[in-house]
Image (cartoon, rainbow, N blue to C red; front, side, top):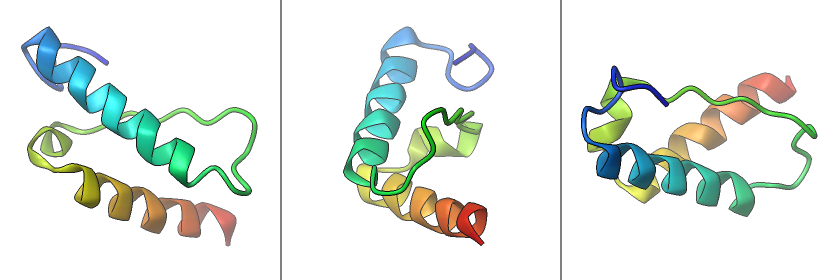
Length: 63
């Protein structure tokens, strides 16, 4: 994750941990390799919002 997403490393690492945790909770049927690039707007989201966004994106991928 680059500094374009979040300037502070603390913020980047928190977002990375939240995305990884959300993907682990949704791990049923995911491909072996999945690359996720969060956008700047994801910095202000809480865990529930990130998970909901990933659910909608993964449902689009599976179709």
